[in-house]
Amino acid sequence: MIGCGYVGLVTGACLAEIGHEVVCTDNDEAKIRTLQAGQLPIYEPHLDQVVERARAQKRLSFTSDVHEAIRSGDAIFICVGTPPLENGDADLSAIDRVAKWIATESRSPKLVVEKSTVPVQTGQQLKRALAVYGRNGGATFQVASNPEFLREGTAVGDFLHPDRIVIGVENKTAEEKLREIYRPILEKRFHCPVHTKGCPSSDPPPFVVTTINSAELIKHASNSFLALKISYANALADLCEKLDANVEEVTRAMGLDPRIGPQFLRAGLGFGGFCFPKDIQAFIRLAERAGVDFALLKEAEGINKRRIAQFLEKARRVLWVLKEKKVGILGLAFKPNTDDIRFAPAIDMIRQLLAEGAHVSAYDPEAVEKTRAVYPKIHYGADAYEVAKDSDAVFVVTEWPEFRALDWKRIHGLMARPLVFDGRNLLDAAEMKRLGFEYHSVGRPD
Ligand code: UGA
Image (cartoon, rainbow, N blue to C red; front, side, top):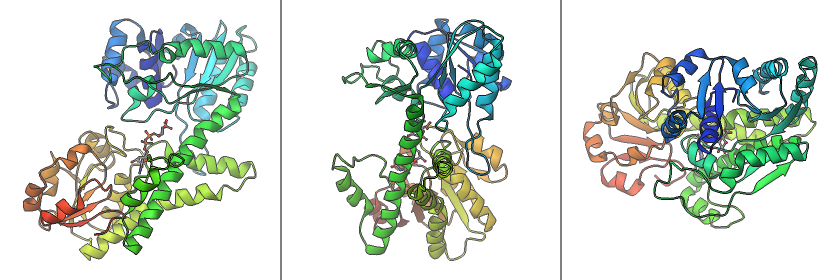
């Protein structure tokens, strides 16, 4: 496993959990030291149990020696980051670097599997690089694409209970190797840390075999489609606000149509995280270069980019002046159950609030430390109550379930002005009104 970011770590740990011997490496030595010391560099439910068990059973190890990791594996999963470049393209330099290492270091046949999200035809480049740089090493290479669909916050469960396993291969040998690797999941032979009382019964996941190009495209197409669905719900929410309808009623009824489905129609502050924003951008660029005008995706991206400004405009209308107002932010992570703040709406929102001279106080159950590195000077509350104290408004930015369970009556008493802007439609509007709040949410009548 090369790359111990989110996907690499979860994939490595879960492959060890289902019985394989896994060596993980990363060029971030501090991260490897943390992992070797038995700690995790990220917060992800159940991952600690999986890592601990696999390490205790000597199936999972971490090394900063990439050469050792390459030599030890028959199958090498590339899980390095593909961050966005200035122009929106995916930066593939880490994949290129790793390809050279694998090519020059390998002494035995290797199956090289792309796990990182990459633009279509990366597999072809990878194959070429392995052949060119490995020409003197004597090893043979097969390349496969195996896109990952796990979500942060539910990553372990998603890995062990996938909706589908997609592999893009060039021949039967690579297909059979990957089928063998995933056999415990296909046959449901693993210890599941998520469902301690037994996993819900379901059919084995479909094992989808495609060409490498199609597999690469499936990942970008899936993420972009989900992003599109969210932007659709958000545009609908804007319409509902203008026409006095309720977006939740509309999307609930829409979602009952199995052709539409209920998921990813939650309106709010839009999508963040290290996947959707960069993947939709990269997909647009890919289409442009292929000569296809995917304007549909550009609009979905545009709708998403406008979410924060629109939300703040609403706040400005009510608060009148933002300068010197004390604003409490509840939620910093881009979604609940993670400490990941990459492309998180809260980060952008705080930047804009500070630019307007507001005083920001923030709280998140897991993401405070990572946010402190970005905004060292804002105030961080020990809990939601401290953030609400004396504030002129509270913004709900991430839908952590525990925010719903707060003692909102107490918060009402603590605030200078009992005003709540719920950017995730987390709270019950009628209940908030009953408690005496001025309450504004997204696409629901105020
Ligand atoms: C996403 C995909 O869901 C995974 O299938 C994929 O494997 C992953 O990207 C990846 O490419 O690695 P993730 O970014 O962890 O997973 O999180 P999601 O649950 O998809 O949420 C993304 C963003 O959309 C969050 O900011 C969330 O708040 C927002 N969202 C989600 C909405 O605004 N509305 C919704 O209805 C659903």
